[in-house]
Length: 310
Image (cartoon, rainbow, N blue to C red; front, side, top):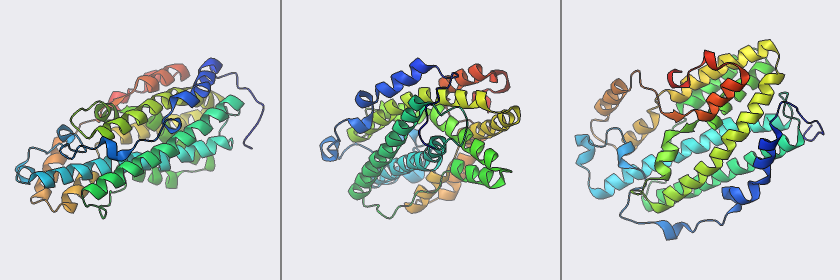
């Protein structure tokens, strides 16, 4: 089930081999663990203020500095717990299915090695995010804050419940994991280079970003091989569901902001959320679609999709 000697001709073998062979020296899990206490500056926020869409609102401006830093710590926790959710609920389940050959085109031993490496990486990313979330929670006395389930996760599970067959259920998981791994949220790059926030948070995000860049190239090869081995009806199902996944990943999700405003008991939060929803009508979240576009070109469906307007 897990290990075969099949070599799939659809793969660009040199790409898969290079990714697998570089793992020991490339990934965060193989680097020395950070000493969290050495990278903290009590005067710096955990999260960039210019990524809070209503930071200049009068209801926020009246808070003292301690409360503002606490608000930004909650934003940091919500940001990272969404990353945990995507790894744990979207990427890891798909990797587990691929390891068991639930889809064709991934039986090559080198591919199985790379999938297993991705599983290790993602689990370590979860540990990294848990560590820095707990660190922020303790520093700002917010151990009881609960981040909501991301909208994209709720939509994925609705789609899975509607699946008409086991194969469609698996293809839905493939579609959502493909978008998650082959398009990089602009926030990841933004936070990784932000000099205004806690050094610890910037360093952790940069380590995560570097791993995800390699994952996107690996997924591009893996998904291409799967797609080319699918029947025509299954290819059409995948196209349908990746279009839906693209829409969900680029639709603004304000549930975390709503939860933070409520947790902090910020006055006029209903007005703030109403204004935020109104301002985001028709807006699409920015993501880097370079690798995903390359996949669409390779499998011949580029003319059907424009990720920027999904």
